[in-house]
Image (cartoon, rainbow, N blue to C red; front, side):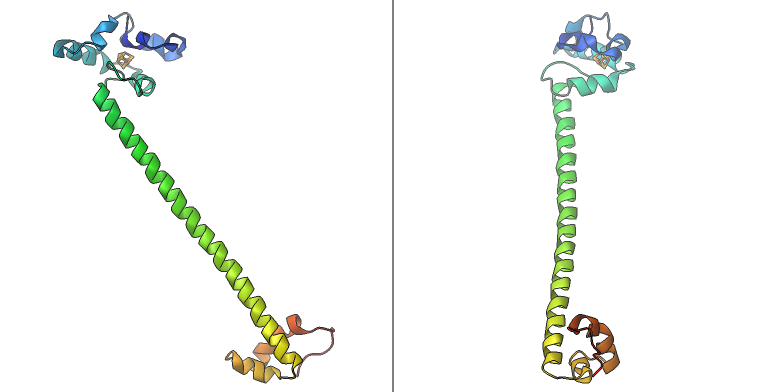
Length: 160
Ligand code: SF4
């Protein structure tokens, strides 16, 4: 009887039939004596399903599973959890940067809207495109090209 038979519902697993410990005394995998451990590990080291066994036994607190002792499984488990935390942190950082980008796009759109409104107000007050352009360091033509369509209210000519 192998160590994997000690767990519940393991018999249904396909890989169990290929375990190197099938038919071996299960007690070998749960004794503290060094001689037993050496014997058990000698079986695990040639086991073709060591990875499957390690996965299943990761949360077990007793015995040798996948060639690992309890304290070794705890260390591997802690490392896995650290990787998950790091991954989670990376994802949060990436999401935060995307959120900041969205905020910037919205702020830029709002800013453009505020500028267009100010230009429209200036134009409605009778200021020329030359005056408007000068406020932005632009030529008359450049100011007209940029804002004429958004400040024209009646579809008429707007080239002043
Ligand atoms: S790794 Fe070891 S305990 Fe696990 S199935 Fe293989 S021989 Fe058995």
